[in-house]
Structures are given as C-alpha cells and as structure tokens.
Image (cartoon, rainbow, N blue to C red; front, top):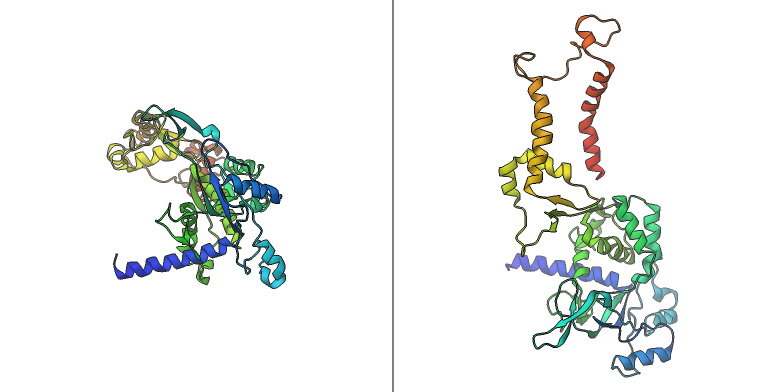
Length: 397
C-alpha cells in the first residue's frame, strides 16, 4: 500500500475508534459462553450466589469480576448527560457491577450430529453442514435489550420507516420478544485481523459492528461535516440482512445519540429456476450475455415487469422469451404495426396526438366524431405517466 493509502487507512481506523468509543458507552465487558449444541448454564441477573455458581461453571474463580465499562464519562442513552457530572458514586456502581452472560450462537434446533472421519458423533450446523464446537470467552456486550422500546416507538411512529410494509410488520413482530444483549467483540487471539477495541488490545471489534459503522465514517463521522449527510434519506438492503439493519444498526445509532435512517427499503432476491444463485452450483446469470440476447430494453423490461420487492422473483431463459414475445412483440408490437400500416399511415410515422385533428367542441363535424371522451382520457393518462413513474421511483414504490 502506498503512503497515501496508509494515511487514509489510518484515518479511517481513527474515525472508527471514535465511533466505537461512542457506542461502547452502551456496552459491558462480560463473560459470554458460546455453545453450539447445549446451554451450559443459564443467564443470571440479580443473585450474588448465582454469580458465584456461574463463575464456577465457567471455570473462573468466584472472586473474579467482569466490570461494566469503566468509563465514568459514558453517556446515557437519550439524556445527553454524562454520569460523572451527576453522581460519581452512582456512576462507579453502574460501571463496576458484575453481570455475566451465557449465550448461544446456534440454538439446539439448528445443530445436529453426524459421523466424523473416525465414525465418532460430531455436532454440525444444519444450515451450513460445517462442524461446530463450543467455546467460552470474555467479550464486550452491547446492551441491545435497553433499546427494545425505543425501537418500537420509532417504528410505530413512522409506518414507512421500513418499506415495503410486510418487512415493517416483521420487525415489529421480532420486537414483541425480548432482545438479547449483543456481543460486539471477539478475543484478539481468535480474531487477530480487524480493528482493536479502543483502549483494549485484547479484543477485536466484531466484523458486523465495524462494517455497520462504515456508513458513518465514509461521510466524515465523527467530524461535524457528517451531519450534512445524516440521517440517511434511504437505506437499501436485502431481506437476508433485515435484522442487522432494522434492529442492530438503529440501536447502535440510538446508543451513539444519532438518528436512524429516515427510510429502510428492503428488497427480496432473484432466484434461478427456483434455486438461490450460487457459485458452487454455477447458476449465476451473466447480465452481459442477457443484454446481447434480449437487448438492453428487452432485459430491462423483464426485470421491471417481474421484479417485486416483497417476495423472491424467479429467472429462467424460457420465462424471459415468453414474456417478451407475448407482451412486447405480440401486444405492443402488434399495436405499433397497425398504427403504422401503409393503408392508414403511408408515411409510416408515429406522431404525437394532434388535438387540432380531433377537436372537442360539441357538434363538430368530420374528424371530430372519431374521438370520444375515453380517447382523451387515455391520452391524458399517457401524458401523466412519466411523472407518475418518476414519483414511484423517488418513493421506492
């Protein structure tokens, strides 16, 4: 990397560290145990005796402490106040109370057992088929549970915060259940490549968190000029990352005292012959080949005609040919051929509608009888169509 690139990367990392320090105000340094096929112990919250039993179960001495953030100047969500200026003793207690988490990366329902290389029973993920194991480590935990009600208020206050509506409804349904707190770092020895947690080189920021914060750092955050671009007017995402962008990301923004995007537009996926596109299956569609085969306008028409955001749309060559033949070649092409037929249109042109040839005055003779009110309504509708289409585009409809 050249020197200029190195400086840019360094500045981006500094921007990210500033961002993470702000978000870390809503995090807690805790012990989190990942288990892939069973829960070792349950989460405890109040009892000191339970804390001790959890520590013993995790193999830690009972006197160990996993403090909450030891930053007395951390900002409380929503108030803009700093705890140290309000109640130093309360701030110390707030940031040193031990809370321990035991969490499950894959629930039992998503794990099965299969014979290993030596015939032994091995746990594997039902989704990927990859072997899984359990591990325990100390990470930073974002207090996602505290943002359940603010997220619900945000979505209920703006029915178009997430569109189309079925996805808005789905997120609200998720928020009917309790939100578990979110691990936002990994031990550096397990994840050496990445951005270190500011002030704690033993932890690396989890990839989803630093990826999300790029939405801010690319427009200059935390410098003041980023406010010229934030909040985002529209954030376009695929349905498979809805939870990350409609729950986790807005919660992180609220935790940093920032507004969520004004609108999150969610689209579904294109499948091929009913299957997800996959490099391993080799069923990826080559758009350049489609342009050569169907022309730019023909392929664009198919995508616009068949693509809907609410559910997955299927692609296969026979479907494209059938649609273009029936709707463009036969219907629209047939109409155009009739309008430009030499018997009625010797010049073979397709002029704009001429109101002088079709006057609206009552009792007009001659050509006037060839135009009816329905004809004028059709002409008006066609004239209004470009603006209507532009409005639909602008509003993601």
